[in-house]
Amino acid sequence: MSCWVCGFVAPGGAVMSTERWIVDHCVGLLGVGTLIVRPHRHVERVGDLDAAESLELGPLLQRAAAVVDEVVRPSQVYVSLWSHQGREPGHIHFVVQPVTEALMARYDLHGPALQKAMFDTHERQSDDEMAAFAERARAVW
Ligand SMILES: [Zn+2]
Image (cartoon, rainbow, N blue to C red):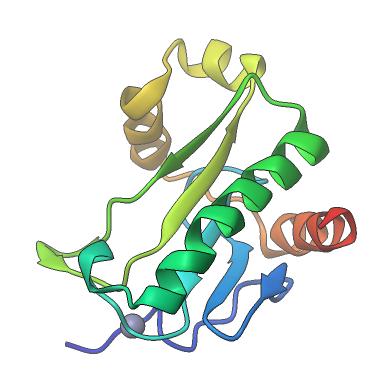
């Protein structure tokens, strides 16, 4: 199965890139300000991360969430991983999603139900919005 995550370039480019990880804007349907933290290497299970990748992961997730906090000022930042491609394990990518009071009010939901509702609406943020956020996040990082 070909992997769309390997080598993918999100609108606005990388917010942060290390030798092992890249952080960029989420192209899914989770709204402006949602970042993705993914390994450069094709890894399908968190348990398959190597020692060096594992050491970087915690600080990288923390920093990504802190940057989202600083730029968006949300009620909460969700960090989740649902890496399936179809029903097969896919290239892991952690979602770092700002959830504001306005977002929760709009859907009258929070948590996984909010994420599902956002996917169900099929409302995708524009490439320009993603690129602009990536630029702001890069500056804060
Ligand atoms: Zn891949």
